[in-house]
Image (cartoon, rainbow, N blue to C red; front, side, top):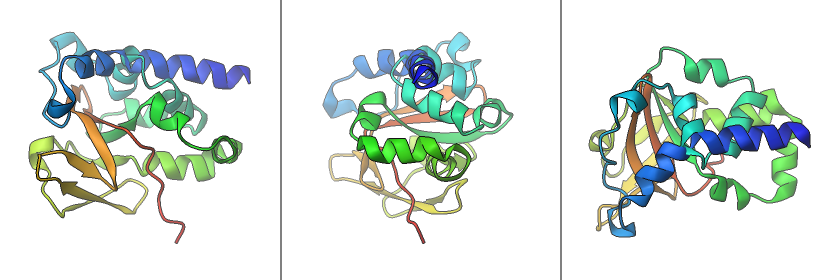
Length: 180
């Protein structure tokens, strides 16, 4: 329980810049690129950016438990479709418990399904494209008539948060890979 609390705190701290960026636009502008980050923010890696944002405590905690933190601090570049704490809260507790019980297996599979190698900005996305994840399974990208970007049915609520080793796109749903 204490580990989960610490993870939640770390994820919350990582999300602060993303929350600040998200508060700057209306829901109609949600899929539009975020304002350019300050040089200080762009110099932070994906993990530090998520911690500073404050709305990704669950994600950061899960990344740490799965042993993926050093990878996401690495050179990259990486594109992370980052679910918010609210998105994780929508996952049934028994599912979260099962994932956390298998951090280097099931949890790592789910987390790596949110990461695409390379730096993929929103302007690089097109309707109907697929993006191969670190997990090995593709994500389906669609762009609705109003310009909203969807990733496997999850809405991109804030796009193009640049980091020193990639980019973060905030999504409203936790993505689950197929079980094959």
